[in-house]
Image 1 (cartoon, one colour):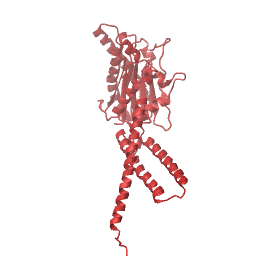
Image 2 (cartoon, one colour):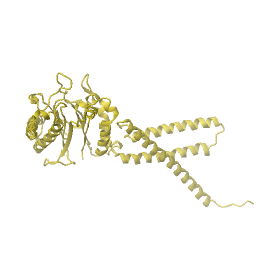
Image 3 (cartoon, one colour):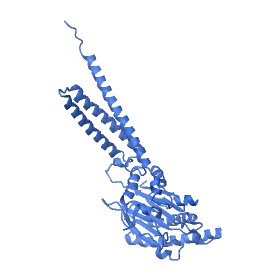
Image 4 (cartoon, helix red, strand yellow):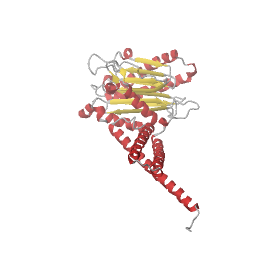
Length: 397
C-alpha cells in the first residue's frame, strides 16, 4: 500500500454550543487500473468540503459535493491512467482543467437534484470544495473557496508549498462556494509533474494553526508533525491520534470552527535499500527499545562490576568521582538511544499523548535495564559455579 492516507473531521466548539452539526466533510479513495477502489494501488483521489455556516443544508451539501466529485473523478482518472505512457506536463494540465470543469458541473447538477427532493434552493447546500488526484509521479488539484492544500515533493530538503491562495471575500468568513455564479471563474487548478512525498488538504478551521497568514506560507512544524507520524505509524493509529488532536484543548483554544484534515504520504522504495528504523511500526519499536535497554543493562552492570568490585581503589573519593561520571555518561547515552529509537514520543501531537509515550518509554527502559542486570549476574554466577566444580579439591597437609 504505497499511499498512506487518513481523513478526519471534528465539530467546532461554536457549533457544539449552537447545537449545529459538523458542516465539514472529507473522504478519499485509492484506485486500481480498472478504476475500481483498491487499497494497494497508486492512484489516490481525495476531497475536502466546508459547508457555508449560514445555509440550512450545508452539512448535506459538503458531503454530497465530496461524494459526487470522487465518483466523477474515478472515471476520469481511469482514462488518464490508460494513457499514462504518453503522459506529459501539457497533457496532464489539459486533462486536469477539463476534468475539474466537468466535476464542478456534476456537483452543481447533484445539488439541483437534491434541491428538488427537499423543495429548497441549491444555494442551501453551499460549500467550498478542494480536490486532489495524485500518483507517485504527478499531482492535479483544484480549489473553490477557502481552506488550503500544501505539498512537499520527494527532493532532498524540499520545502512545504501552498498550492493556492485561499479565496476570501470582502468581509470576514466570506468566500466563494461551488453554488456561486462565478464559481468556474474562481476555481483554481494546478498540476505538478513531479514525485510527491506528502500532501495535506484542510478546511479553513485549521488555517490559523497551519498557515502564516501574514505571508501565506505553510508553518513547517505543523506539517512535519503529521508527515513524520504517518511515516512511522499505521493508518488506524494515526487516524485515532489525529482525531484526538482535533478535539484537544490546544486546538480548540485556537479555533472554534469545524476542523477537517486530509493527509497523503507516499512510501517510496529504492532497490537494495532496507527500511530505516523510523518506518518500523510502533509495536516493533517497543521490542527494539526493550532489547536495547536489556543490552545496556548487561553492559552497565558488567562495567560497574569490573571497575568497582574486581578493582580496588585506594582513594574512595576518586572511586566515587569515576563512578558518578560513568553513571552520568551511560545514562545520557541510554536516554539518547531510547529517544532516537522511540520516535512516537517525538511526533506525538497532544500533551496527554506525549505524557503517555514518555511513561511507556520509562517503563520499557526500567524493565529492560533491570532484566539486563539480572541476566548479567545470573550468567556470572553460573560461570563461577561451573569453574568451582571443575577446580581440583585440595586438602591441607
